[in-house]
Length: 282
Image 1 (cartoon, rainbow, N blue to C red):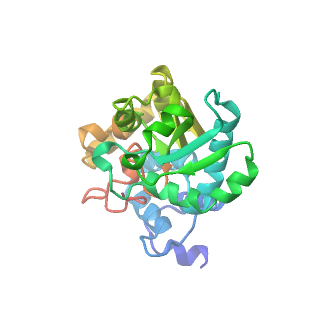
Image 2: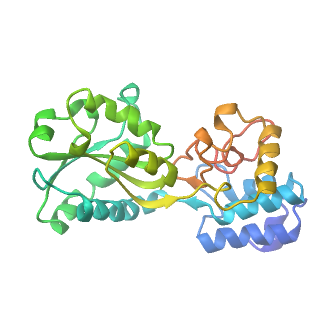
Image 3: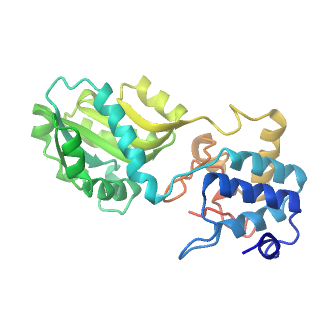
């Protein structure tokens, strides 16, 4: 598909901006066409075509810093986060590791991203064991199946998830274990991608956290006052709910995992009558 043919899908989009978004996709190795879902590239073009010059420039600037972790990259990301855990954590009670998906009690039995991540890990468990021969590694499919006696005696409970935003999910999920006398120093939190603010909050509360990539807020850290005001106006126009302004908890995330976290700016995922072409709908 050539440039002219592709641009027919969004003829109102200035060619300069079309080339810019195409370059972003190319440089980041994002798929131009997806299978079994909306065409992400086309939706980006349609979204941009409906914005004014300043809004387009803002969204393009943010997208240049956007991280899309595709399913094929999950094991690579996890291997780096896990290695950080292995080499940094103090195994004072023995080198035994117990994987469990990070789930608040109200989500037990639900198909969540942490459960999907464990599925990927299980397929590579033998290879992991061969690489880290000093360690004994096991897993459980859900928190309510954990053998608490093993954790209290010698195993380190590794709660895994693909993304940490505000840290609230971690706090809600670990309450289940804390209520059963599993202390924070018996646990480690491992994620593929995390927001720095969430990690700082968890560390301040005594959690051991390990992640492959730590992200800054998209506008508060790297943006300008005029860009912040522009995003406020844009979110008001597309009817973003109060608790999701600038992403849930004001996270200002620029991340898509298998499913886009609601911590990400809603312009990317909130699909409604005012934002019909959100490229990464939840």
